[in-house]
Length: 266
Image 1 (tube, rainbow, N blue to C red):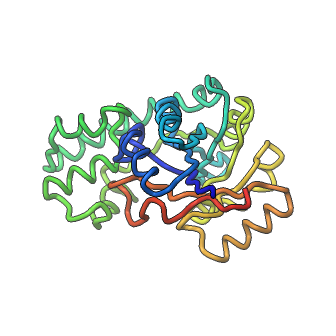
Image 2: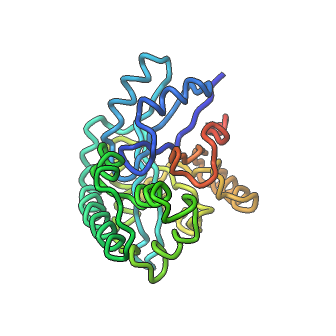
């Protein structure tokens, strides 16, 4: 029996688990197939594939590209799967995002320090050892550890990272159509991520023309109405249906790893 999770984040981006720790947990959960879909990087893919071979778990190369509909500014995430190992086009469109994330993280850490929330430099460095980027999850986790917040989804998160928060620094993300074409140019499978979270099903018609292959059905933010619309789109265009936990390990809000898996129809 196949059991797969095609949406997972590790310490190569904003997840708390290392690739090896994730693979051990996957084995314990009875997973047979996984995709590491770290934000805007494929750095952890080879390590995961190697460990997967030793554990009897098939690891599908994956990535989650942070994109935007340039016409209206709406954020749109794209999952890419099974692309060429070099991933030259994916790396090219993600490189500017990574550079901006590094700047954003450093500015956020400085802003928090200036606000009186002085965070341990050594602890932050340990949390970001793989990624080299300070994500908001790292900052929240450290603030919980030092007593500035009670939990990861503390109201302080909204205060700092949303609206006029001192840590809400925008990034110039890649256009979603460019992201789709990059995945396809690398021989990959392009899937629209969690449309229930970002209200992006309006893009399906145009994305299909650009090369979209599927839509993420199984995700905790897709309610039943959205799921029905996804099924209708998939039937109309012959799209794949995927799914996964979108786990960030100990940095996640609520979802337990292994509770949401890829539908058996894919």
